[in-house]
Image (cartoon, rainbow, N blue to C red; front, side, top):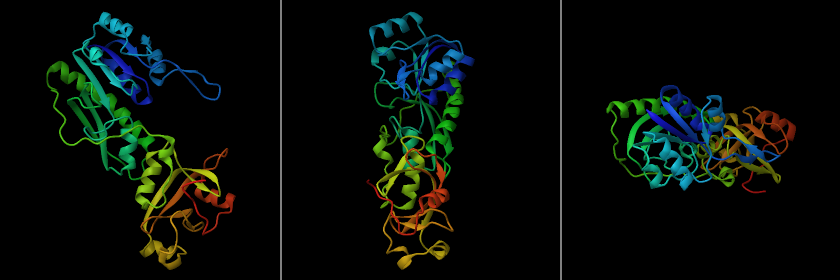
Length: 324
């Protein structure tokens, strides 16, 4: 099939490789180089880097819906395009240029439409997610479904780890989708069910609320890893939290191992319960607790919870807070 590929972020690169291997890929469209890093030097997108390695032509419009873009695509006259993690809204005029406008989305639509489906699936404690291919329309991930691929989410899996697995799944799913469209064995089907949404994350979304139960705290920590990253405050210092372990209710065998006042009910959320035997254990809402296993102070390297306890001389009763 004669195609163009449209994408920007890391999630799109396995799909780009798959499409380039099996189809006549005429052009790769990606975002312009943007300043990044301390030196704010122009940086190529992951898709551009991959396209260069594959020796594919690259087009980087500021506005993909501009007259220049439309004319360029019209001259190529592709049968379709594959879009993944691009970062610009596609107009109806652009969609009308091809017969098969295929979009790859990192969720099981209609669940988690929007910019951050992988993060929100983890933050909200989903057990299963996946990848969906759809025919694009002008709505937000609302087009008819072509194929889906499902996978379980590990109880300690981070959004970053899940992202990489789903990206590889997408590379396989898009090839099966394109083959099915060519053969007539895959037909678009209207999305069914009430949609949920996954808005773009901000840095503020990573702030830990210790009043939430441990499961929600743990899911926030892994769902915001590696970006924007979970964080809390201790003695006016920002502490990044990279990894955690959900310990659940402060009862039974767990409570017997911890020095708890009043069975834990007299301890405030955010308070350090243990800084020794079980590691860095912190009280959460509803009489639950998490262990912080990987943390980081400003201008310091990431360290284990135990090393943080020892280096910071943390003691039972010290308290993490939701503000500096």
